[in-house]
Amino acid sequence: MPLFFADLRDQVIELVEYTRSLRERDAAPQFVPGYTQSQGYQLPDWQPLYPPATFDEPLSVVDNGSLTKLVQAIPLDDQELVAQARRLDLFLCDEDAHLLLTGAASEELREQLTCAVRLGFYYEIKDRYLASIGIYGRY
Image 1 (cartoon, one colour):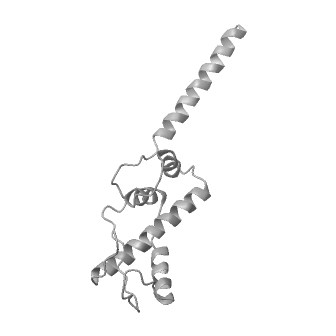
Image 2 (cartoon, helix red, strand yellow):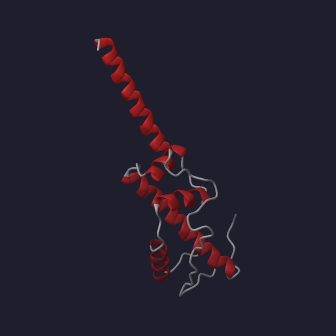
């Protein structure tokens, strides 16, 4: 086989392998708006030992610790992490979401998003409790 055709053959094989890798990457689960893995996941209820009297009053150390432990116990896989970040309106670009969903995200990105989602859970649970006893914040 002449050298020209050998080079051409190698280039075609390279392109086929590249196309195959792109198809495999695109076949990974994609984010669907409004989707959560647990469909209808409810955050756990929480009751402080020392309820605050106003919205701005900080939680006691004991209540803060119990709420933090409760939030830390909520399991989050990558797909759930992306879905909850979207639900909480956290800034998450499509590229970072794709990296998380394909498992190619750095530990730093995963940790940053996990912390942000857990912080959102913390305030969502706290605000829901305060609203249940008739204390509303400034919105």
